[in-house]
Image 1 (spheres, rainbow, N blue to C red):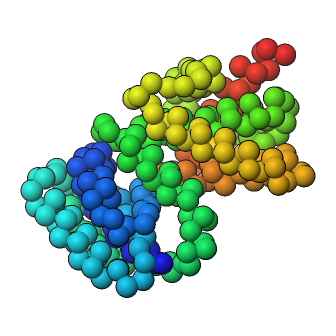
Image 2: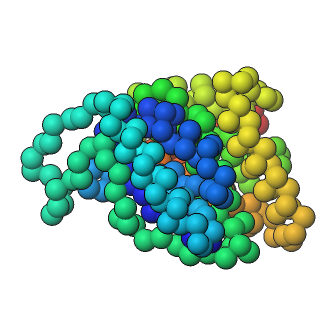
Image 3: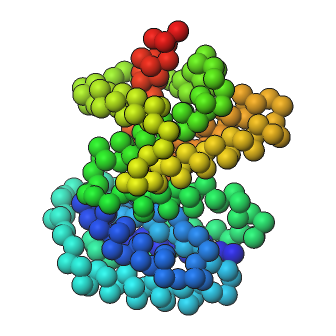
Amino acid sequence: MIWLSISLFSNKANWHRLLNEAIAPFVQANPQLKGYYVAFNYLSGENIRLTLLTHLGNEQALAAIADSHFKNYFEKAHLSQQPLKLPVDGCFMPFPANTIQYGLYPPLTISVDDLEACELSINISKIIVAALQDEIDDETILTFAFYLQISLVKTIYNTLRDADALFAIVTPANAFKADDNALSNLCLMKEIADDVMQIEEFDSELNWLNGWIDDCKNTLLKASKIEANNISKIKSIYHLRVQTVYTHLGINVHGKDMLNYFIVKSLERRLLASK
């Protein structure tokens, strides 16, 4: 099998439309597509990386279908464009907005046996398409990432029932000095954490979160059956899932540190206070 590397350049303000009006219909309408990878990216301009998984031999036909679909969408959607601001970051001019580009990151050839290793990214990509229906900005991305991360924390706590072990897993190695932005958002994140930790099943609007939690539960259940050193394996699962979410959402180092700060502070209030 092979991944086809496509980059859809458009301003972040249009990403929700691109996801719902162009990407979702495309992935639903093409049975030769065996999986897809959605990642937010900022190299050479704001863009969404849409990597398509198909069998070797199908790639040219699928590329032609994708090219026609997205060029036609950009032509008819009349998405907004922001004027170019000089100087630009880096040595090269950004690609034009509302265009499709190819080969900006290397494709990966895989065997059918390796498909399981891609399932986490494929599942996260489906969740991104399902969840992000409204306009996307930096705060939206961080809040969405926090929902996924605190839900994973919830499943781990329900598995371990041990607050000390949980803190050993989720506490980052590097200290984070909270800035004004972090402090202003901490109250909201604590409220989200309280809701996620208390609610057994979310309504249809957050059904994507139910799916994510079920996937986390299944992964932890498999690990508990095959691993003698359960805490070590759970910690590995936690960091893999969190880092994969960060990669898909294009979150920078400062954003990662801030999210981990939100997680620890939310848990301190909820779990340590109950001891």
